[in-house]
Length: 114
Length: 112
Image (tube, each protein chain N blue to C red):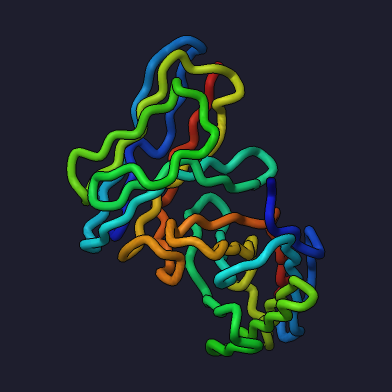
């Protein structure tokens, strides 16, 4: 049973396209996150939601829009894709906000923009 | 700005040896966490140490925290080939958002 799942695992697309990445967790957690890992393995928080409410919104281009239809799902939509968006995107979840809870990560979605 | 910096960036040892990775950070923290990432996979939580703790153990893992030096270390004893992975420290500020700030990571290779 996969705790945090993401689809697709790989995404190859052309510059200018719009794409979405889906994330689901079956852990019953209240908080979900999106991270971006670049080619040097540097991992940076993008967004977090707690029970469908936006909690963290880092300095991310507004081409990126997270959507949380319910607390088990957090999707990431990216408009007008650029070469620099190529990275691995990880979804994660934790029991709640407040830093003392371990985060459970999905397997990642490798996005390649051509 | 990037909070954690890890040292060394890469480490190669023989099976059975101990591996030590260090993490430094810049500002006050609430807690510090260590994660492992196997190649092509997501991160897995290893251990969390609170700012008022100095040392914590979990199996073959030992984590220390020195808040006066703003540094932490992860020691893996009696390493195995399966320990080959990247290891990241992540810090939580004194806030309630759960925001993790990751270091650059240490890539560990354990040779059989």
